[in-house]
Each structure stands twice: as C-alpha cells, then as structure tokens.
Image (cartoon, rainbow, N blue to C red; front, top):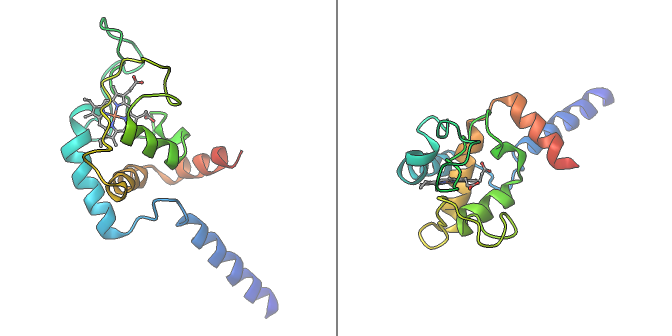
Length: 141
Ligand code: HEC
C-alpha cells in the first residue's frame, strides 16, 4: 500500500517535471506560437522548421543561412532563456561576437515576452521525446 503511494508521488513529480519548462505551454499559447512562427520565422527557418540549405556554410556575404529549429539543428542544445534572448535581441553579445553580421532579426520591439515564449514553446513542442530527454540531460550540467 505505502509503496503504491510512493509510486504515485514519484509519477506525479515526473509528470509535473515534464511541464516545468520556463515557457509552460498551454494549448492557446501553442496556437499563438505556431501562428507567430508561420508569420515571422518560417520564411527563413522553414515551414517544417527545416532551416535553409547548407546552413552550416557561410555565404559569400559572410553571413550564415538560417539554421533548422527541428531535431537536426542545434536549437535544442540551448536553454529556453538563451533562445528567448536571441529572439529578442538578435545575434549580439553574449550570443555572438561584437559586430557579428547576421540575418537574424531582433524581435524585442515587435513581439512581447509572452509571444517570444509562445513561439519557443511551439518550436519545442515539435521536438520528439528523445530530443526533449537529451536536452533535459544537457541542460542539467
Ligand atoms: C530573415 C531571416 C530570419 C528570420 C525571419 C528569423 N530568423 Fe532566426 N536566424 C536567422 C539566421 C540567419 C540565424 C543564424 C544566425 C547566425 O548564426 O549568424 C538565426 C538564428 C536563430 C536562433 C539561434 C540559433 C539556434 O538555432 O539556436 C534562434 C533561436 C532563432 N533564429 C529563432 C528565430 C525565431 C523564433 C524567429 C521568428 C520569431 C526567427 N528566428 C526569424 C534568420 C532568421
């Protein structure tokens, strides 16, 4: 009996842990995030989050193409707070060297913090469970 209670408590904690991301997505927030993604991000990062071709190779103008946000990219390597800062301020220090040239716009004036969190929650919602688990492990370090 008491074992059962502990097991239930453990499961509850585990399930609560899954939802404790800073963006705490709810259905409406995710829908808003998806709409913002399609309107503001998909033109560069791809409708399927696939990024631009050859995204690791700098173009002749010295800039990088837009990376994918799906499991093949590196977005999931970074903590949500860091991603939010990049979306708000663009590729500026401390996320890039001073004077770094990039096509990534800064959305801090056009999107609210809630909208930035929702668009990131939408991106995160597209990652398969194994990527989410790997990410949780990486971010614990
Ligand atoms: C005009 C094209 C363009 C648009 C529009 C755009 N991005 Fe980017 N984004 C880029 C490029 C290019 C990079 C890579 C910057 C670099 O390393 O030089 C980037 C990088 C990023 C990164 C950091 C790299 C990573 O994967 O962690 C994030 C996060 C990001 N973008 C999110 C967004 C979100 C969210 C939106 C929409 C609100 C958006 N971007 C809209 C071009 C764009």
